[in-house]
Image 1: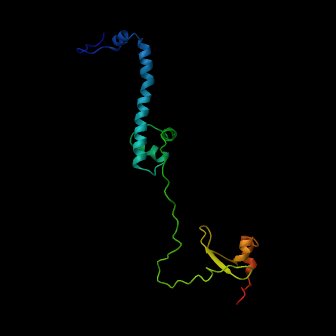
Image 2: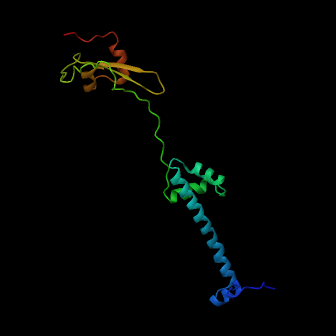
Image 3: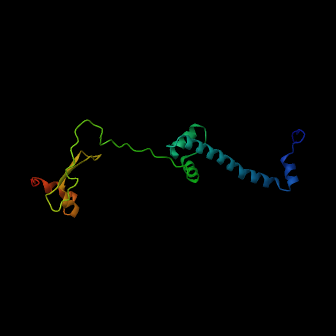
Length: 168
């Protein structure tokens, strides 16, 4: 026996008869549309979290959604984020400051500014480079030979040991 209905309510069987569709067709359509409504809720939650936390990737968003009670895994979150083009912004990696130009020490003039070397042993330069995984590396080489391609970086340091630039 069907329960008593208040005035104005129709049963699903009656609505299907009025619309001219079978009850099985109605339930088939309802079952297919229910996941779309659930996915819209998941998309909304992902978009909300991605916009609140710009540096969160799909793993952190999936973990946050599980904490909020959503039943999602990381693969689904990744797929939905790709479809919605919600990419996380990478945090800039730490780079140590290598130069502090605001100091009180005397600045040595650049004596080679207007110099145009025309041959070897006229201008010598040195470079101290910070390399993250290794200690400080120093190089010294003849500027003119570097421009002409005469020395390779691997040859430079042993090639200048014991060699003094000409004094003028």
